[in-house]
Amino acid sequence: MGYSLDFGWLADATGAIARGAATTILLIVVTTLAGTFLSILGAAGRRNGPALLKRAIGVYVEVMRNTPFLVQLFFIFFGLPSIGIRLDPILAAMLAMTLNMAAYTIEIVGAGLDAVPRGQTEAALALGLRPRQVFVKIVLPQALKVIYPALTSQIIIMMLESAVVSQIAVRELTYEADMLQARTFRAFETYFVVTMVYLVLSMGLRRLLVSGGRRALGAGVS
Image (cartoon, rainbow, N blue to C red):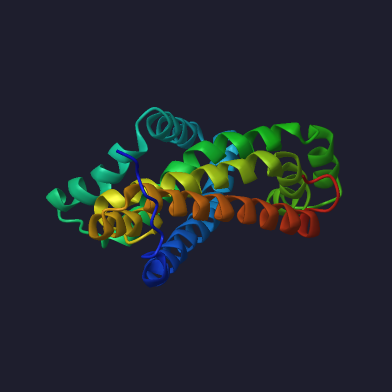
């Protein structure tokens, strides 16, 4: 028996899809800002901090990179309440996404820091700049320029992985798709439309990040 496509329900579903997409965008904006900030601190601490801090960051990176994101999300949302820590679903999602992204980007940022010639740091220190000034004004901008393409890709990956947070009832794009197909029984059409929305979001976000990177970091960002 043939299957007859029907997109007639889409007009009434536009609002739900838009709300889901808006939540997905909110998640990735918060995750990008917080995760990048944590990764810079983590990469710097792993290279210049005391031995205990270096080991702690190393353990954190290994644990987060070698366990499934879904398990990390469930641990935060379902596990932490057992010890009295209860988080709203969207806050739990933001925390899980931020910690996961930071673990990966610590390695990316660290590679960028290692790519900056040591002589530049020594020269800046010799001119009287403080170590923090050297890091913020000289080392970090050059490192970000080197790793920006990899960082952009990681942000896109994290946005796509955000679909997992629908499992804790965060009303993002995938959650709204699940609700729509349950009401309309049009699974093919629903997930086709949502796939196209994810594609547009990914391409738009990549273009925005590349354009913003060129303005902020200068030529050479792609």
